[in-house]
Length: 271
Ligand SMILES: NC(=O)c1ccc[n+]([C@@H]2O[C@H](COP(=O)([O-])OP(=O)(O)OC[C@H]3O[C@@H](n4cnc5c(N)ncnc54)[C@H](OP(=O)(O)O)[C@@H]3O)[C@@H](O)[C@H]2O)c1
Image (cartoon, rainbow, N blue to C red; front, side, top):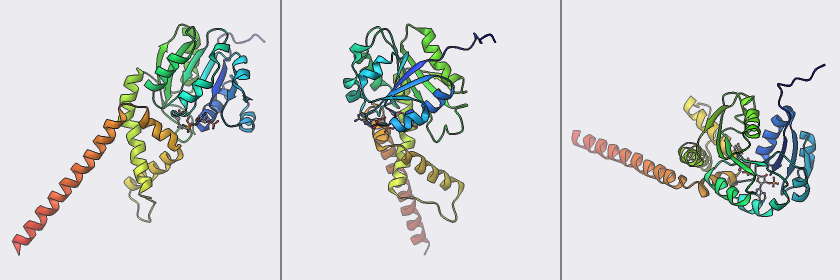
């Protein structure tokens, strides 16, 4: 039988940091027929073999696997430390580096300093995770910035892995991403964390609105605190959103207090 020449050949993808999110992505990449290797701080060899991934304990072996793409999936807070341990000088030939961190200016800056000049860089943020993407990726946003791309073919084959799953592809600069994500994702996580501190739980008389709040709380606490704090520490736009939230709470409290004072005064006058 003649082979289907329209099918692109599988990619060799090396994952740095095989945590929960990388495992979630990897399951789909393996299903698509790509060859995966991984390296991580923790020994994830059992999980890797279950997923069909070759796990290396050392960066030297990982680099010697000659990957087309090196996918950086570590936590935001550990990126700088992780990049220091990668022996970039062992990499032979141009490679496409891609990161999936939930902030974008920070990895863009560090990766441009660290990776070999002949390597390409794309900064991405799949705007979904193991919970929101558990029934497939159709319609879910995939944000990317082609920071330094010379091998367009390899880059579009990588993007095709998300396109073919039905993701909504959104190209934007790392700066634009961080500005928008501070107002959407960081705010969402912050409200969820506040609700978790308040220990809200379902009641026997939940309104739809309250059910959404409980759901939000449950979703955000599934992500590590490292992830959440990374959204604040390494997104320069997050601080102003936190301040805006504090001011908004103060404004709402003040409006309530004014209403209460006026009501009490009117009531006392009518007696
Ligand atoms: N979860 C999501 O829904 C989601 C969605 C989009 C993007 N992301 C991004 O994907 C990345 C991974 O997220 P995650 O959910 O898997 O959880 P995470 O807590 O943000 O990151 C866990 C990963 O970071 C590694 N790590 C943590 N501290 C380290 C250190 N000191 N040295 C070396 N490695 C370290 C862990 O390695 P070991 O496992 O080997 O210990 C693991 O691979 C993050 O950058 C996150 O922003 C996550």
